Length: 87
Image (cartoon, rainbow, N blue to C red; front, side, top):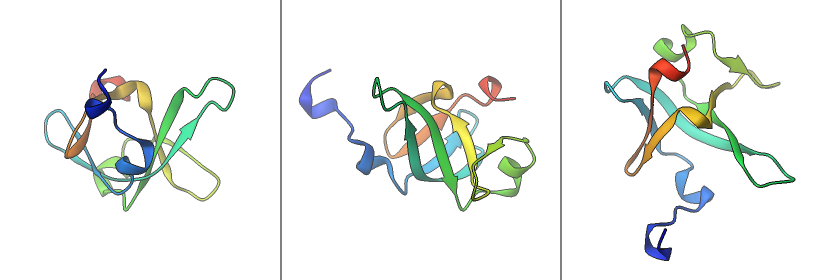
């Protein structure tokens, strides 16, 4: 990936998280990394929607919903996730 295509984690904070079908999940509140390898593990949702709440996603200690990063299919103006990967 060229330097101009790289996304730094802080650039993702606050971006809207949507499914491939356009359903809004919330916004990126934080990212969870594997400290040893630097691998992205989860997206922490803030301002999550009722739709996201109904999916029974894992929650952190503060009650924020956690979306597996493996479900992220695209990052641009929005963070797009494959809904079928988390259901």
